[in-house]
Each structure stands twice: as C-alpha cells, then as structure tokens.
Amino acid sequence: MALRYLTAQLAQKIDEELMSTAGAFSLDQLMELAGLACAQTLATVYSKEEYPRVLVCCGPGNQGGDGLVAARHLGMFGYKPTIWMPKPGGKDIYQRLQTQCDNMKIPTLAPSQDTSSLRDALARSDVVLDAIFGFSFKPPVRAPFDTALPLIGSSGLPIVSVDIPSGWDVEKGNAEGLGLDPDVLISLTAPKEGVRKFMGRHFLGGRFVTKTLEEKYNLNLPEYPGFSQIVELPRPTEEGQKL
Amino acid sequence: MALRYLTAQLAQKIDEELMSTAGAFSLDQLMELAGLACAQTLATVYSKEEYPRVLVCCGPGNQGGDGLVAARHLGMFGYKPTIWMPKPGGKDIYQRLQTQCDNMKIPTLAPSQDTSSLRDALARSDVVLDAIFGFSFKPPVRAPFDTALPLIGSSGLPIVSVDIPSGWDVEKGNAEGLGLDPDVLISLTAPKEGVRKFMGRHFLGGRFVTKTLEEKYNLNLPEYPGFSQIVELPRPTEEGQKL
Image (cartoon, rainbow over all chains, first blue to last red; front, side, top):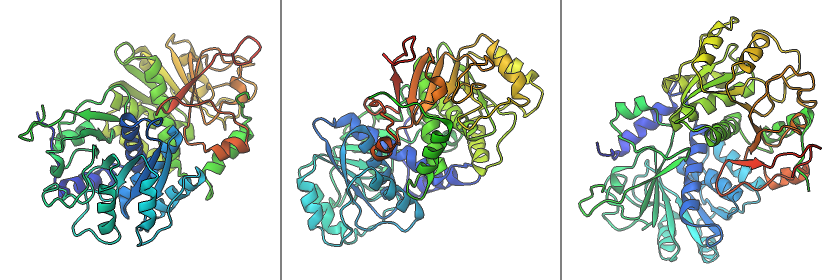
C-alpha cells in the first residue's frame, strides 16, 4: 500500500482531529514533537562540526512555532542557531517558545520588514532551516517573505524545509518556480500532495499518529526505526512513484 | 566537576523555575520530553523483541503523567504497554494523556484499591516501568501502593524506575529497605541525593535545562550524545563516587 500524500484540506482535518477533545493532544505537545523531529532531521544530515551555524527562518503561523522548538533543540545538540522571525505570531505559545530560546542565549534578529539583517545572517550561516510556510499557506507570498525567499534561495546554503518548502503550493508543488529548492525535507504527520516529486532527502516526523487515525485516512505510514522520531522515505522515481 | 545530586527542595525549586514566567516551559512540554526520555531508556535496555509487555505503573502526581507519556511512546515504538494507575490525578492533563493512551488502544487496569488486578498484570508482563512516586514523595506509602510495592518487588520482573525508585526517601535512599530495587534508573533534570549509591544502569533525561540554569545551580550535567534525549551515567564506586 502506497504512502498517502495529503491535500491541504485533509492535513488541516487531521491536525484538528489530533487536537480535538477526542484526539486530546495540546498544541504544546504536538509542536514539541514536531520541532524535535525537525532538529533531528537537520542533525542527521548536517553535522554540527561541519554545519554549526543554523539560520532558523520562522513564519508567522504554527510552522514558525515548530521552528522555535527546533532552534532550542538544535542549541541543546550543540549547534549555534540564529532565529529570523520577522512577523512573530500572536499566540501566547510563540512568546513562550521565544523566551525559551532567549534563555538558551539563541540570538533572534530584530523583527523588520527590511531583509538586510537576513542577508547578513545568511552570510554567517552554514545551513538554513526553512520553517516559514506550512500546509495552511496560500499564495501570494507577502512582505517581507517575498524578498526573503529569493535571498535564501540564492545564498547557496543547504536548506532543510519543514513540511512544504516555502513558496510551494501545498498541492501543486513548485510548478511556478517561485519557491525554495531545499536539499532536505521533513514532512510532518504525512507528506503533502505538493512534494510527491521532491527529489532530495525526505524524512517523515510526527510519531504521534495513532493506528486508528492512520487507518481511518489510509495514510499507510512507514515504520519508524527503533525509538527514532523520524524515518527517511525512499526517493521517488521519475514518475513520482516511490521506489 | 562532579555531577550534583539534588535535595527534594532543590529539585522542586528547579522545576518551578522551568515553569515560571521566566522559564516559560509548560507542563505539557516538560512532561512530553520527560516521558519520551523514560520510554527511550526502557527501550535502550529492554528490547521489544524480548520484553514486549511493559507494565507502566503510574502514581497520582506528575510522575504518573510522565508514565502515561512514556506508555504512549512505548506503544509507538512497538511495545505492548499496559497501564496501572489506581489513583488517577485530578489535573486536566492526566485525563488528556490517558485519552491519548486509550486512542492507542493501550489497556488501563480499572482503578481500584484492590491489587489483585495488578498481581495478574505482573504475571503477564516482561518489564515494569515504575512511575509511581517522584521527588515530591513523602512517606508513608499509602494504599494501595503499600501493598503494590511488595507485589512489584517480588514479581521477579526487571524494573525501570523514574527519578527516584518508589518507596525510597528522596534524600536518604532505600535506607529502610521499603522501596523497590530497580535494575535501571532514569533521573530527570539531575539525579537526586537518594540515588547517589544506585548501582544499576543509570540514565539521565531532561534535555531542556539551559546552560544558565545549570551554572546557577552548579549541576555539572554530562554531555548528551548526538541528538539523544538520554545519557548514561557512569556507575558509582563503593564510596559513592562516580568513576
């Protein structure tokens, strides 16, 4: 049975179900596990010896929260993260996650519409964690992200994208060529339609989906190894089929 | 610099500091990471092939919550956990964590003062996760735990204890001989005074303590390997010193 790729609507539905009274997960819990999976993915591919300086780019929504959690864990793993979060989300949880990073002495660039500080930070980084847009993204890309994406893309740095590479359509992928071109992708819960043909290293995280939920939506998730929070997916063939 | 062993009071203080406005952690976050560390410790020592049936014994306090989180992760790892939680705690979070386990089809023995169901469950288990009492424990051991501890202790099953083996004084250890005699211990945040001479395999979890907090309290924590959530501590010599 093939792994299922989710539409934006189904991804939203599963997320709501996990956090409903029936699913009983709190956003704190899911974000903690998601962010940990992101940090572990980056650490699996890019060693802290060769790629110590991680620029964690956070969007204004829940994916920005995953990025903040990942930044903290990367700091714990011995990396030197820096956070770029130009439009901090309004929810209380973002403020708490930000404070946790502040307490770790992880620097955050001052929020600004101006991307010159981003440009400087890119020049001082070894790898980018792209936690800008998630499965709720709808075009167009708004300021300051419209100027940020080309800057990040042309930096020459390796990019690890969370869930859906920023600028990609959640279902149609990078058809218009406006999005980032990541080397590594970490899909959360289940991969989205838009990344079906992603040819880089592709990991899955979100080891909190119950068998019941998996069967209800025919997700056909792969087995995670041992007690890892992530599993690497096989690369697709040219036809978009998994080997 | 030697690892610091915490008094009950200091353990309490650090916990409060982590969850204060300044520390900014939620109980959900800390419990998720603590429970994950417990599950990973058990999985490191007892393989799911040889020890699939884990009896997770949960107390009425926060440590019971760690146990519920661990049970869920053990289920995710492919173990067959069963929960014994005779006095479910009143906090909303315990109910949510319990629901998450229910959704995983992890059975929970009916709460009861009678320990006959515990006796039966022990006979059908391969290993025990002891999440009954934590660092807030003060003697005496109350019913039904007073009859449960001898039952668990005489079961012959290997025991993994969380933070402080149940029945031990947090600072004086098992001086009175009334507590469990675990094979494995997972200390959270930092080990407690009472386990200084613990001779089994001893792990540390709680990779959320900032350098600032560590230095403020002279914790002298060891380095965690890679992106693991646990680190094994060296065994003490006869004098209670770490090798």
